[in-house]
Image 1 (cartoon, rainbow, N blue to C red):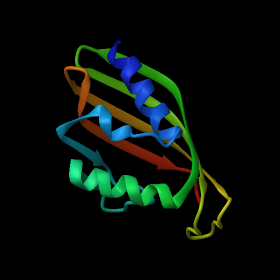
Image 2: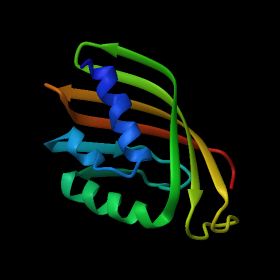
Image 3: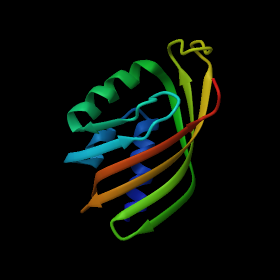
Image 4: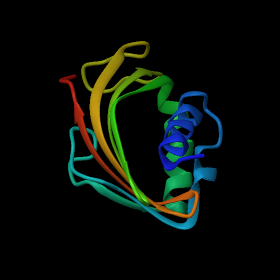
Length: 127
């Protein structure tokens, strides 16, 4: 399986609410650069990713990740993703059941067949 295929499987696991953290090395770090939801950005270890994953399951009822562009180069994969999510809770001007959209620039670094680093640049449509 190519690393691009692993990224596709990882995003599909998130959509299907399966264990997406199994795709990471135990020392993995995910960095989310400042955006409308996380104004200061965030840097998460596996422990923090597990906590965020659990919280996220209660915030969204559904998510889709449409890969618009993907480039694989050795142990790195870069992709542009069109994300759509349906809220389970109110968020600013949105109510439960409302949809959100964003474009994500997501950059992965692999160690073997697992993700060791993930960097996200998330651009949300106004909400």
